[in-house]
Image (tube, rainbow, N blue to C red):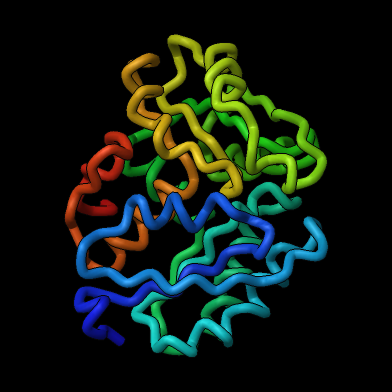
Length: 239
């Protein structure tokens, strides 16, 4: 519930213990009157990120949140529309009467808000995670004519990647027929690149933490634009 530090909302944000970039990025986007409460969970296996998130939800009730945010890109883990629907049900069971959103749903909502049809996708991890991600968005009905991964085998190596490597990757992925450039993978904090990338490529650039926070705010009824994080966060509604 709201309190004196979060009169407009208290958000419980679920983040892996190993991720040191996600919290600073959320805090950089924080809207006045919204309180961020970070709940960190142990991520012992990349294969069971979904299970780790679900196990962390009960603890997030401790701050009496107005919203619970599952910030991980689960579409990187052998995912499908049917699996996301089951996961949403599992999340809802644990969240109880507290509203919640997931990063995976947020990215879909952002793409549909922008009217995207053909997208380029970049992920930081290895080839298997890229195949799952591309397959998920194709199942949703998007075309993915270009995609790439950085090939990082362990998330510990993703928190200090060179931002020039990210930009170089998108230089190779961009094409005239691409509507939106997409970054999946919450451990890469590239929020400060969003506006420069949009200016450089002349099209929207979506990064998972940016889309997740935008979706959380709009779902909660907060319509404030966020300065410095690209064109999406100027949109005041989800639809």
